[in-house]
Image (cartoon, rainbow, N blue to C red; front, top):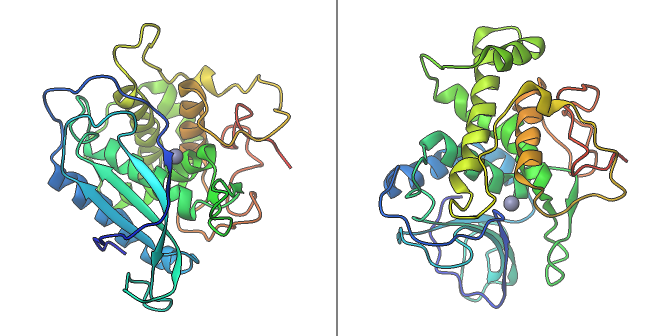
Length: 293
Ligand SMILES: [Zn+2]
């Protein structure tokens, strides 16, 4: 599903990564080629999961690396002419809703961006499509296109998609603080799995610090510590659909990293317990966005 369509859309609405940006930056950290290769790898890795999804997913990449304004990176729903069985854009085919993962070169150009961080971003966006419950019909115009909510997209990204990426992209060494390693060792047995857990937490932290606006007056880096996982917040009265704040997102990435259910286990669009870690204090979805049923 990594086609490059010229989409003739009637309507487009954006689910964004949730950050506004001020000012272009002068140098890049990964190339557009690397970014596109990474997204294509992730989409190909999940091709069977995507086939089971009712809506096709298309991928677009805008080569411009400078800031284009408010939203640099979009996950969007379009109305387009799509052949119902071949799931390709076709003039004269019935008009239906499709999902589009749209990137620009701005994110790859951010100082501090790494291929790992970009992969986790792509996993988050994929998580809106196949990340399972809890979902919401975010677009009134497209009630048939319900998407996993922001917290779930993070949780899915760290627990499932990024673990599959890591398995195929191992690193020989990883400098991890002993607290993080110890936490991961409570959940996983093999050195490879413990390292994958720790790497996911570190990359989640890196993601949040790389994409945040650097010139915001009160914007500090978020740092993972084991105490971050103590979920002292009271249960929310309702599910948060939009992006939680950065510290809550890091807690979600960490919980996903610590979830020891198989990354390839089928998940459910209805049941938020299927193949997740709701029974684990360390690895379940945090209260800062998740309301337990
Ligand atoms: Zn999102």
